[in-house]
Length: 401
Ligand code: DI6
Ligand code: FE
Image 1: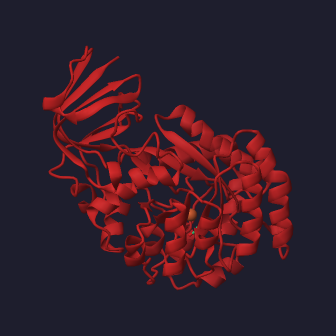
Image 2: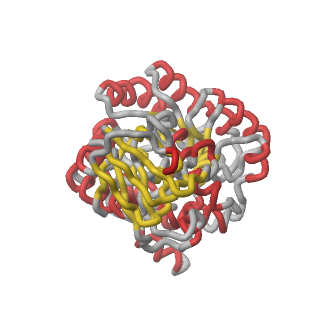
């Protein structure tokens, strides 16, 4: 059904800027944007339905391009312990940290994981999120990584939401492989990844490149396997130290390198040349009370595309609001509200390999957008969370939220 949406302004986010259209009109048809422009230029079309948006600001549907939304249990108990003075090392020695989430995730059924993840994903959706990425990485064996990835697929089936599923089997070393990280990487490459890819559960491959996780050499073996399987790669890099994982990611044409607080100018140059998006995660920076800022000036100087995401996970970023991340991107990382909004729309789409179809309001793209009753686009980064009045449209249909 051809629908005309009017009485609105649009921040189209094409080209990574607001690219504002005042008094805009949007025509949707068969789930796509058939036309968008100033209302006065609207061509003659047979319109079946007209929707008055009451002067709203229309943006692309928001995209959370880095989440670990599927997991068992949570770690609020550890959070409380830490604030009572128990050290992270003591908590880890008691079996806490990622290991505790792995145990809880392995113990949970697929249905239990689905129900708890759905709640968290619905919280994200209340901020106008229409696309998310979900990583595995708390199963760490074939059956449990499969269980997590199947939940990601089910969420896409049952919610009005596009989901990209990323295999993060190389997130941490499972207890069965203690002291044998190379053997675990070989197991991922030889058994897990081929099986999960064959089952159609994997859209991209990710790893955690860090002293306390996997080395660049180990990550590279995984990337070679991903290339063999024609799967794009991403990388958690430079979160706690500089191992130049982001340069390695760029060498493998990664969709994105994520975190990046400790990246260097050379890393930025490599990423710019490869078109690898920098995904910044201010929720984890905040929650860990980190002090090393990502090098915004180098990223800007070399025109690296910058995305922003929640990193929703139980250990380092229990963040259920992408709009709160917009605010933190501005207050903590000194992004402008315009950069922040581009970071959860057009650049986030590129970080998921969806840049041709999502992330901006342009003819031919999927009709995912949000009509916000706000004064100006900067309101989206200005308010500290909370609910803003809005209407959310997914594939041309208004969804309730
Ligand atoms: N970086 C992080 O901050 C999280 N994973 C990662 O690769 C930590 C995940 C957790 O603590 O559960
Ligand atoms: Fe992460």
